[in-house]
Image (cartoon, rainbow, N blue to C red; front, side, top):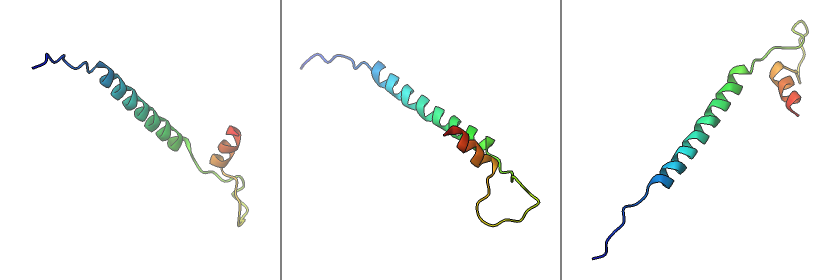
Amino acid sequence: MKNQKPVDTGRRNLLKGVATATVAGAVVAGTTKVATASETLVSSDEKKTGYRETQHIRDYYDTL
């Protein structure tokens, strides 16, 4: 029989931790954007059909 060396799990644990941190960061970033998105009309007194520029659309345009 061969002498078996104990398996070093440090690298596996590091990769698991990095993956978990990435997923947690994505969840936090996604919930932050959802929480700040609000819909307010530019002109509420006019009844228009079609395109309405709301606050979340203006926020999107600001990111471009």
